[in-house]
Image (cartoon, rainbow over all chains, first blue to last red; front, side):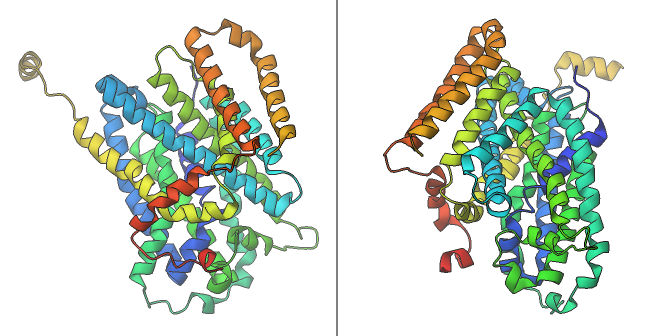
Length: 363
Length: 80
């Protein structure tokens, strides 16, 4: 029996929300939402909170079952089809995340190393992590997730002197369509937190865990976004490939900590690998539920291999990942809001039979 | 992609089989078929990427949804 604590679930939710969101999306958000990019993030977080509420409400009706089990036990055919769709969704998320981290490494750290080699090394690490089960994932997240959060939330103390408040002006000139478009870009990234409903059973996962995870992730992201605007400025930030990395590069505490970006990337990297691991875990768990008598653990290596290959195949270049952010929210909204809304209605508790009703009345 | 990369990919699958051979032998038929099926799919994709065929990128197909996006594509990455 694998053990996982409430704190680990919260941190897993935070990592699911945070680590991919801070790579490329800030550029597009800032381009549209300008100085009010923080409001875009909060609007998206509110929408995702509603999605989480729906998912946890559905999960709450099925004691000691994850959402895959609940779906398949209630509707053997329809539940399997819906589960397979969610498996495909998280498969695509894993592929995109692997390609994002591969491109980032290639552009920033290892420009002459072939993409395939970087992707393979990341995937091997993620696969070994998942092979140990959800307990290993939880423990890895607990170490690196908390470290990452502490580091990100401590950046303001180091960079406080660099802020230029002029970049955030005019404060009260709200561009509502721009803010909403900014929310559009970040919505699928924040919404991936619903994945934890497919990882943990009802007894372990509650609404407060998921919402706290989302809150922490949003808070850390908000801190980064506001600082990026105040330090880099909107015109520069909206034309950068990785603005958050540029923000972190501004940290120069002393000569000794001149390249403080490398330790931060060094802590972010395992968190990113863990996030890819969650998606692999969900895919394997989903296949295990959909196909009877199959073992999720046996599928980890083949699924990892397929994700690795698809990360090379699906995207022509890193720019395609940016362009995809425009259309991906349309797909993601179906999985984050529409299907949960349908499940909330369709998976109502069954009405009590007359015998049970009588017993209840007598009791 | 080239033949060398295809060969390295085959090497990866062989390493996987070498590491997992005992578990693979012990596991049930469903797992064997699923494992072989997924690995074969991965191998076919890699072979396709290594071939001389012009590659079709699935994400480019997903971009066909763009007319349905509720705002204009005014983006710095498209202007260049």
